[in-house]
Length: 97
Image (cartoon, rainbow, N blue to C red):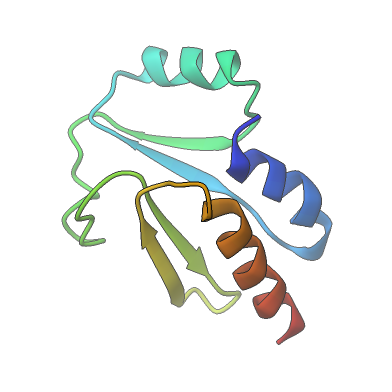
C-alpha cells in the first residue's frame, strides 16, 4: 500500500486527510492506478497540469503538508527510503501543536 494511504489510515482520526493531485494523466489511468495500488485516496485529476505553476511544483512527486489553517508548512520533492519516516515525524509534530 502506498505510504500516503497508510499515513491517512493511521492519522485520519487525528485530522489528517490526504489528497493526491495527478498531473498530466487521463482520469481513467489515475483511477486504474489507484485501484491497482489499493490506495483509497481522494484524487484531484489535472489532465493539463495547470496546478503545477501556482504551487511551484519543481518535480514529481511533490508532497505538501498543509496545516488546519490552510498554510503550507512543509514540502518535499521526490520519494526515497526515508520519505515515510520524515513525513511521519512531521505529521506527529503538527498534531502536537
